[in-house]
Length: 167
Image (cartoon, rainbow, N blue to C red):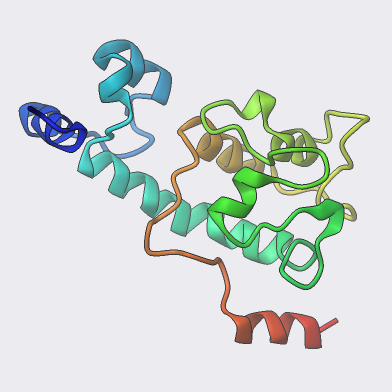
């Protein structure tokens, strides 16, 4: 009897199409689900996952570290929200989950950074993110909010102490 993992591995191994560079005509999560079906959609190709992890490290982590974790960390949780780990972001804060992977339109972070809601406070509160940063965060969410397995927390405790001392 096949296990879920063996089925996923078979699908990945049978997919001989070259993987495009992420962002250059790569399939969205919805397109992947439509072309492969629900069961296989959960299994991104190894190359696609790697591309999305690189995108996270190059574009998303810097935004979260530079613009978000000063107020949304282990010591300070504005709105009850911590943004230090994938689990924290999925759990969310006082208003619910911060992101809905695959749907930026339903993600509270998108509403906050886009300053599109009267119910959700605009974030960051003093100055908007740059247009390309907003686009990158929305793209990351729409593409499933891939968070590298090797990253348990965005910043270390020593970095957290430096942030606290710098206030």
